[in-house]
Length: 311
Image (cartoon, rainbow, N blue to C red; front, side, top):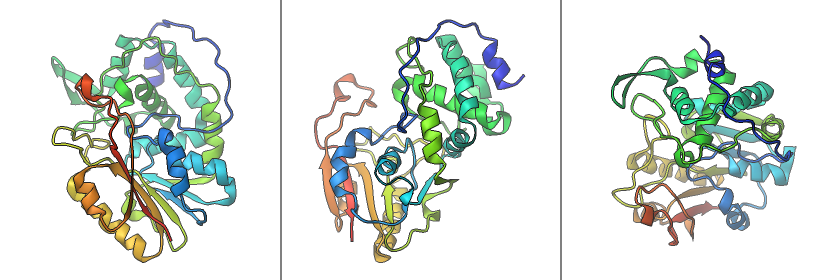
């Protein structure tokens, strides 16, 4: 049975209302650490002049859409991420957004607790209560349209739009709080498809990008923990350790020596401040909702830092 057939076997539980259509591209997925709410604050720090643009920790791509709205096709955009499933989703939106919209619509009308966990657990089998074993790799079992629709559905309906996988690369986030959420598309994926056609989108590590003098790079890596209890880094099964943070800093030093402009966002913790002590630093306040303790979910301190290297 194909994944599409699996979806249509579930009963329809709601009929979504027609949404107002949009024709402006913006992130079609939600991503931990997404930059939409910070773009206005970042804008004065973005280089006035640059050639090519690189975003090697793509996530939701908020900075890319922001720059495209300003520069359009006058720039060449190189987008990449080390999350292979995410990159498959982006390329599917470029090549097959209409098919993704159709399957996502089918999933939207069937959204329920039972349906969510059936979709989430499609690639695994239960071996004991709440313990699962991987059956297959969804990137091998599902076609690119099915993979994209499943990814977007889980992203938009899971708890806090959190993308997290375990050591077996199994997505393990519970369902979100609202069963009435409407995730039907309103023209956004078409708009994104048209914009993303101008970009070079690849599955690769940041170490594989090759910007030259005059280019601009925006890094938005998994954040270093603010404390010993906030260690979320599992965007991929490999995670992103403090050692990885140090390797990234060395890569940034190499870019600086080549007169490549860059900005890097991270958590405003002592480790990052000290690591980038020789660079221009700016701090911002932003509410994050990942903490398991409700009283700590709303933070008003300067918990975000932006490292800037401009010519």
